[in-house]
Image (tube, rainbow, N blue to C red; front, top):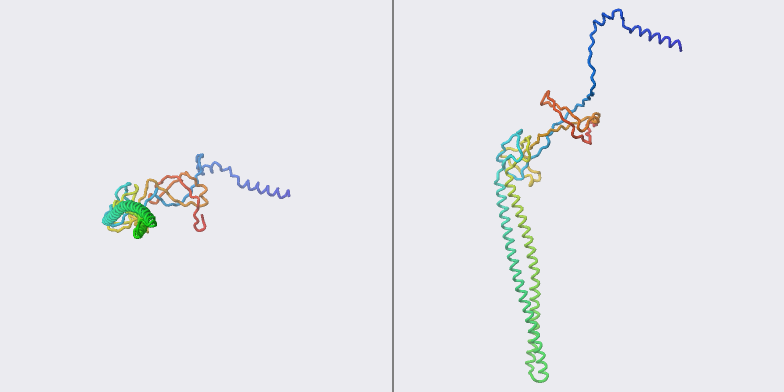
Length: 325
């Protein structure tokens, strides 16, 4: 064991002597070798994470029309800057003008029907009161006549029993009493009929309520088509840049509210006051990304130019592509 250590020590010593520089020519060697020196600085170590992304506007809006018709003018092109409420395009007003005229006619017809129903109700109520009072008077009169004829019948019966009147007079009194009984029954029947007329009034009032609702519906329809007529002039919903122009003069477009497909998209306007980059970061690097972290951005369209930004949001859900998150 000691022998082995001695051998190792000798080998190391030999190697040390072999590696030692030859000082005999030290001055000559130093004159031939140039050393580069730099000043040491204290700073942050920068770790770069590079990725690619897509530039997106602050937000963008699809422009559609609530009206339908032919495009008469659209004097803008893609890339044009526009301001909110600026006139964008104009549609032919003929279709919507006809719709307004039809809605007005429907409303006038509904109002006429409502007026007629109200007049009929007023007449029906007047007749009801008149017929009711007349029937009540007839019943009162029939009851009085029946009482009077009943008293007369009883007197004739007493007189006939005492031989003071003839059988004919007694029979006439009985007949008169029976006739008045029938008259009273008929009067009460007419009174019941007069009272039952109140149900007809209630039905008429319900019909008027329905007519009023129909008139209101037609008024709303007229207001809507008037709005559609106004909306044949289409204005910019936001300030921004036209990034897509999807219709041209002479094209027929469909309404965005009356068409099941959602209507024709006329243009897309983007707000470029702020720009965002949607970028994918590898799972191995995402741990180093924090909200608020400053970033440098370069674009192929602006070669050699750098833009600055910061991280605003990190999606909590990753996207798996080729089994890699």
